[in-house]
Length: 288
Image 1 (cartoon, rainbow, N blue to C red):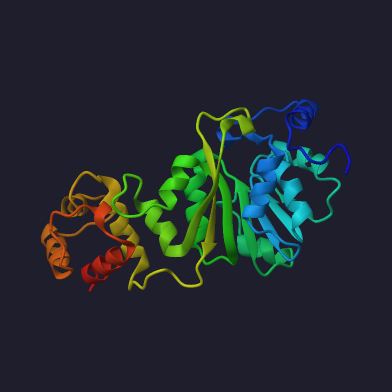
Image 2: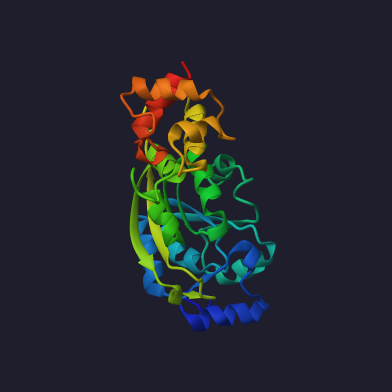
């Protein structure tokens, strides 16, 4: 490997940042990983093999990309920051299995990108900016994309929210969406000391394995998620009060009470007490 490779340490990362006169951009939530051990564990957590195409979101200066390129058949990077493109051309020059695309992942046609690179499916791996974690993950889960798994470094608190169940203070719309589309497992936590600049919070690596079919059957998926969103907009309220005053879902209070009674539930129950299966049942009753 040349000196360009293996950026997973402070000196190499600083060398590249200084060479190109760049610094982490707050608006893109950039924090650069400087711990080779963590980088290797991310690749292992994602289960990357020489048969895999990896879709990496936000490669930054290419630190994680180098490790992914060593392990995968090919890596397709989608980077929003055009200033990072010449940096990536430099740090990834030794790898002939990496394609860099300067696009916003939320606007990119993932199916077309994979098709153009001869891939039928991909595993997503990313060190995601904290400010846009949820929109990116929801975009990847909700669309019928040929994605096998999503392994991402995110804020620890958000990772915990993704895999929690009913009754927890962290349980909410994100938990339910993740459970509907995938099996989630937190693989490890990561200290702020593993980044430059240091974030103010701990991070975690979580892997979401996409389900072939959603975890529960529901007549109207969109309607169910409107109900779920409404249920947690004002989580201190009872489900009946939250939904009858929700901006996400509108229905008469009596309809909600009747639906809950039909389910054998107390009309004063809160949304955080219902399971995914129960939200599906509630949705089916309300949309009859």
